[in-house]
Image (cartoon, rainbow, N blue to C red; front, side, top):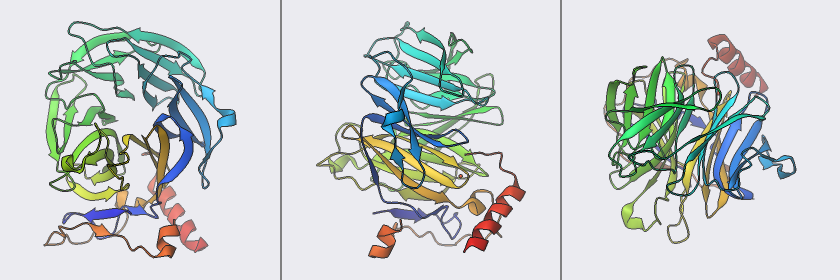
Length: 370
């Protein structure tokens, strides 16, 4: 069941259209990382202690494992951060056993490995797991957390997968499982510190803190964690995060999958709960999404299996193309449960540089089809 919450500051209609039910990809593995390369969809995944990539077909969302590629070819990797770079290449940072070095990979547009390096343990030691990476114009590297959780750092990476200086980030949310994005030469970090809210820290190119704020949880009984994907779409940020009620009995850091839309001041516009996992069976973890044009695909894993949700993005909302409405004077305060008729249960694109004329043409085309 999908749950929707519109804040009093939000638009009257949802940022999401045609949200699917959970889709079981019928694949074992961890780190379900959907990715669109500008031509087609791919699914990245952790399997057999390596990182693999296979084509995924839009509409059926079938993942063709006959065409799968083992990108890392190491045989001892557990955690993966696979990011598309602004030049069309890819950065991949991975971790193995606790206390081991992190592995750094660069791939070209065709996913051929072009360089590889290592980031060893230092003093103090850092957490090897769940390292977030970013590959933008101003920030190219990955974040690490000191093993005791006291300090967080950014590590720059060059084109040959060599690491540079370890730069301390003041007042950063914990880097393990965090989300990184770059907007207007600023590094934006979304993470847990310590929760239940999502903490946002913004840094300039000198890694000085510009802003720090919090996004309140969807409800007072939910703690959010694994806020591992944040991306600006139009005039808003979309964040994928996990969340759980500590009293529900979810194991470790598992829970349910959520999306939240915030504006440029990081004020909440809309929450969307995608999954409704049974804590007695298993919760999920490691959320990630990508989008192309108006198609959104959100992935996560649970019980060593891969799952996705799909939705159509309401780009008129994200780019503020429609006439603005007056905000409600009263908050709704309660989640809105979607109707559960069979018809509705069965009912069920990523470039910020989309130009308004293209968007308008897209909408006109979609309307003409209807």
